[in-house]
Image (tube, rainbow, N blue to C red):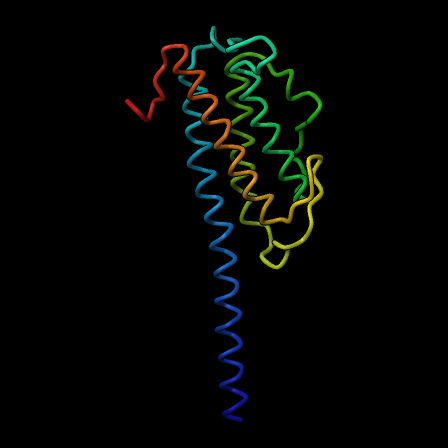
Length: 172
């Protein structure tokens, strides 16, 4: 009986540790995503509306298009992880959003949705396959894609802001 109790205690400790390690992965991604997405929100708010159509060259996304791309990608990646879109979100019409206030509102909603859903990805499924248009990944890699994609476009928007004489708000 004592051996059985010891075994149960060890198994419970192992299961708790395994769960905590998985939670650490999702929480880490969530934290880094929150940091980078918050900076994108700051940039989106700092760039004046008359610069939202600015692009560094023909055929390159404008400020507005880059911000909307981030919002679309947030929703896209989460749907690839099996999360349902929030009511009222239509992936086919997001790119046609106009007006700085509407673009910023859409960005913030997609960021909040993504932050809320990242930690809902079950640890036991992190190795499961996710098919993307650009290759196959697992669920953990998809979470990392969310984080990396946000960082990539944060850098793009920093460059756009600086090209227009706007310092990122957190660097002042």
